[in-house]
Length: 119
Image (cartoon, rainbow, N blue to C red; front, side, top):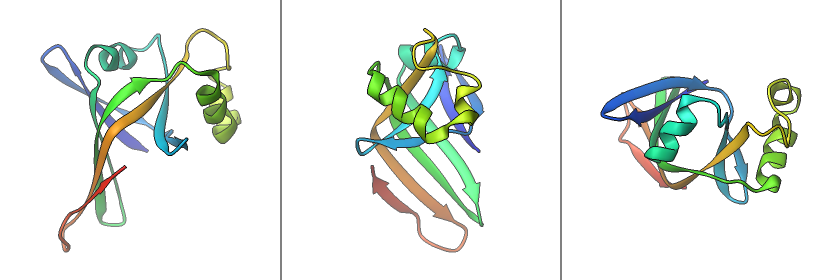
């Protein structure tokens, strides 16, 4: 579980996500074009992702860019299997994947210096 922050006009919006997948060397997230999060990313692609485990947390700054290719959606469905196919199908008209471009991940800890990684 991780959290994705978007911008809605001049207001921040944050919601939980549970799926992220690497395809062609880039990170991808699944969503629906019926959700507000998709419209928010289309209007302003700047997102920030955050999650925490084992006393460390990560923040990923990126541009969320819809990838309409069938291959990208198929890769996501194949990776997550039934967990995702209960909600979406390859050509249902609502399933979308967004690619995280210009992504920089920074890993933080209370005891260590932050480490930044360009993805």
